[in-house]
Length: 183
Length: 279
Picture 1 (cartoon, rainbow over the protein chains, first blue to last red):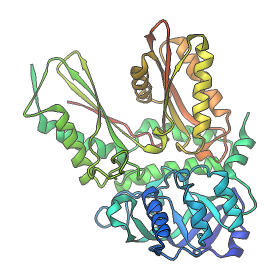
Picture 2 (tube, rainbow over the protein chains, first blue to last red; picture 1 turned 90 degrees about the horizontal axis):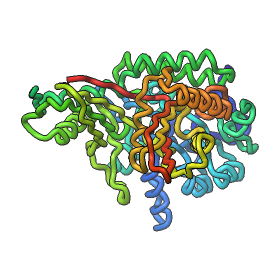
Picture 3 (cartoon, rainbow over the protein chains, first blue to last red; picture 1 turned 90 degrees about the vertical axis):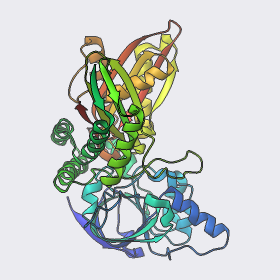
């Protein structure tokens, strides 16, 4: 299977070249955030406060890793179900977020926002938390450490294996894959 | 009366949850290997091979297979000739879970339903007990992730809906879950009993070894039909499309009220972590 190598921050020309169903290896910095962190992002924005990171061009990974054992950068770190973040994602995309990594379908509103704001949604293999931890070079909590596994952590990744699920052309790997193999 | 001290139970439970989370059983690994051979989609095959590599890596490096190390579901079979000494059984299991999740670097995924404040130590565990014959204590650890558990449901069907009603309910849940519960999934179906026992049956159905069939030939046929129909949905590994959507389906059945047809569906992800010990 052909694999594209891409880097964060994601630039428009890279996003324009991605199609649903393609496998990519992602390298650079990404940021973990799940339900509780997203809620705090939105609460902060509503109060007119700054986000704890500059979101422009960045990629958010819906992930709450298991604790890092001594001598390891991170514990298991696979994706969580993305749809729980659907309520927050359009706002994040409007602020310049360019990529989201998770698992599972996105709402039509999020898929439309991906097109409007020229972004991409990647799938990481759910339940492959040990394997995905091998892509993480360094890890540093940057916000909301009181949330434990839901803190915002900046991960430096190298060749993180992902599939493009939603591209800017409106393609959706889940729908197309299912249609193709349905009997 | 055989005496078992709570300290032994604490230590066994601690090790059991760590073992379950680090070491995928051979039974599940064998099913994944078969699935890789059967899968028609190149993307699907790639995903299953990632899962096999992931399980091997977790075992070699002694780290969790998946970061969602689950709520600590524990099934206990207590021989009626066992006397537990030194404390309460429930507290011993809870302490074992607390230690396992702390010392094994497992994720604490248990929180208040509304405030979402984490309990901090993955307790309380979910404990199911059964009194059986003998003087042994059997402990089964089934750490259960949230992604798959979210696609479980109990429905009180009308008796006239029968087997077809059960099948369409199961298919409905599989389609509703799609990629979210991490296919290839394992499906547990509990039929009969009442509202709460059907739910428990569906979870017990998940504990049946993969690749085996119910000894009741009619139920065995139902299981095979469900496997076939679930695989025909095309959802495939991780929902990326493919011919293997389920690793196995097990059905458990009990007699029910003449007015009812309770059915429960419990879905498990491919990272089916289950380990047992007999003391």
